[in-house]
Picture 1 (tube, rainbow, N blue to C red):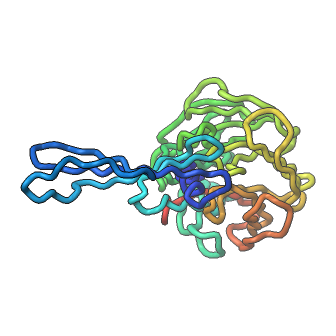
Picture 2 (picture 1 turned 180 degrees about the vertical axis):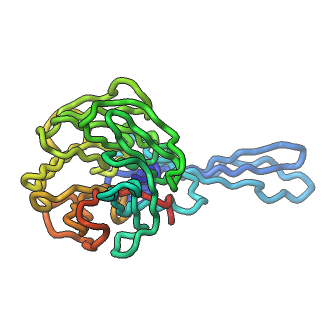
Length: 324
C-alpha cells in the first residue's frame, strides 16, 4: 500500500470537488548594502519599492511558490509548485506461495504491472503456516513483506526480505493480520481481525490496540484500504459465502458506508489502488486469475489476467516505489 501522504497530494492536485488552492509567492531580493526586501504578491496593488541606488539592481536571488491545498476546510497538502507533480503511486498484484513440500520456504511473488506474465520480484520469507502481510513499514513509499506467525509479527523493510527488521507480539494464533496507515502519518502499521472485531495499532510494536471496533460477522475476511481517497486506511470485510463486501470510511463500529457484491463464493479478496487515482478499490482472486475493479461498485472486472497457481494467496502493494 503506497504512501498515503503522496496519494493525498496527488488527489488534491487533480482538482477533486471541494478542494481549494491558495498560492502565495515570495520573492527574496538581494539589494546593495545587504538590505533584503521580501515582497508578498497578492491581488492588490504592489507595495512601493525603495528608491533605487546608483548601481543597477540585481536580479532576484530566489523565487519560491507555495501552494496550500484545502479540502473540506482542512489543509491536506503544502507543496512547492515549482517542483514536478506529486509522485504517482499505483498498486500491483502479487501472491504468497506455500510449496506443498518444504523446502523451499514460502515465497512472495510480485508483478510490477497488473498484467499476466512471470514474477518480477521473488522474496523468500517466512515458513510454512505463516500468514502473509505487506505494507510500507518505514514510510519510504515502497511496500515490503512480513508474516504473522502464532501471535507474532515479523516484518522486513528490505525489498528483498533479507532482514526481519521488526519482530513483536500482538494478537493470538488464529487471528487474521491486516495493515494500513490508520493515522495518516505515511507509515503502515498492523492490525488484527478476529470474529467480527478489528484491533488496530498505530505503531509496529507490542502493546494494546489503539482502536477496537466491530464490523462484520465470524467467518468474514478483514480488509483495509483508502476507500474515499482521504489518505487514511479504513477497514472492511468480505463475506466468502456470498461475495458481499462491506466497507467503512471510518475506523469505528457502525454500518458500512459502501455495500456491494463482487465475485462468487470461495473467491479471495484483494484491494489496492489499481489506477493511481488515490483511492483503493476491490478485486478478487479465483484459482489463478485476478479480477480487479477501478470503482467500489457492482460490475465486471476492469482488469482480468492470470498469475500464480491455484492455492496461492493474493497480495497488492507498490513494490518499486512512486513513479516506477
